Image (cartoon, rainbow, N blue to C red):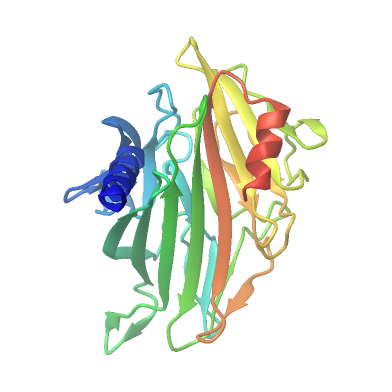
Length: 304
């Protein structure tokens, strides 16, 4: 009898913790906590008047107070989209086959998504995505050259913040692939956030305040981006580059207006991906209301 009571208690406790939920429709997957939206993963193609078609990204990303933090199809850079990961240079067997950043000669297809809830109340959304191009074909038809496996684990709100962990693995199919950033001195490409940028936005890292530059800046491990959103909603996004990433600590392209924030990898020189050596990248985003203290940041980093 006692064992039965304990098992019932544990079952109820686990159920109570399982607060993160997923609801899928034809367009994508809505993640929420206790019916409050957290993020929307776009799986169906979207475009702007027939151009800049995109899929496999997050928008909206909501803050813990319900404020929308991201932008899609911004007028200054129509190709930028919410939380996304993309590369300017894509090569297959030495042939340039497209631009995933600018969405030129580039198509992604979300083949499937899965959702798993965990006992700590978090949930993991996983996706399998193929990359293809009209410049890389067999018998006149585009064929996939990358299979992307991405998972994002969404944690319940804790105090005034929420943590979202990303793992992105690029698997080359049959032939070597290389991905790289812009071919200028900026080298931008990779994991990016197109967030709203109010007038009071600023940037901070482990060494203090950061002044955005034309080229990449160094802020080992993380960049904190606080601002006042929608006029009266203070908060921000903490962007984290995981210590196990290639090129760690990765540099950052930061912008105070009209652009995205980017963890730069690999830069202007492409990195090779072979069928037996995939590329895996890991990042975290922490959305927060109000401010995030140094002690909070330290505690968050210790859980990475």
